[in-house]
Amino acid sequence: MELIKELLDHINYVGSATLFVIGLYTVLTHSNLLKKVIGINIMETSIFLFFVSIGYISGGITPIIIPGSEDIIYVNPLPSTLILTGIVVALSITAYSLSLIMRLYKEYGTLDMDKIMELRSDGQDE
Image 1 (cartoon, rainbow, N blue to C red):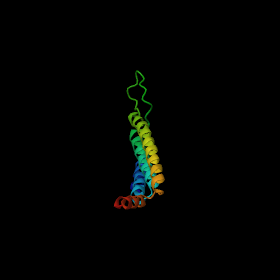
Image 2: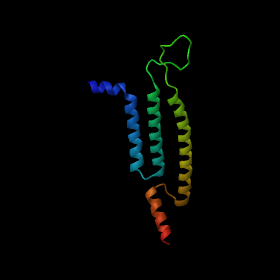
Image 3: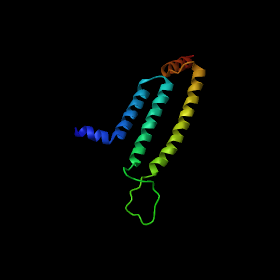
């Protein structure tokens, strides 16, 4: 019963770890390049959730300092700031990855990494 209470108290960490494992499983088990990019995006989202969870303080308020109030608990704004930067980087990497996947599809006619490697090895033997 106590274990269930602890899990429910930290459900955001459990959710983050679960999302990361799902993304990692997708990246490791699928040979389709598009599915690998989706798996990487799921992993990135789990990291974003984890950082936002770290920055949250129950009962905390926006970090605007009011003179004469020293006993107020503030929410840390740094994780949210880092996440905004991370989202921009993740979006850029995803766009670049998708453009490379489009080029690979034009060149080889497939998105399967194993078939692409097979086609590349056949072309080098000639």
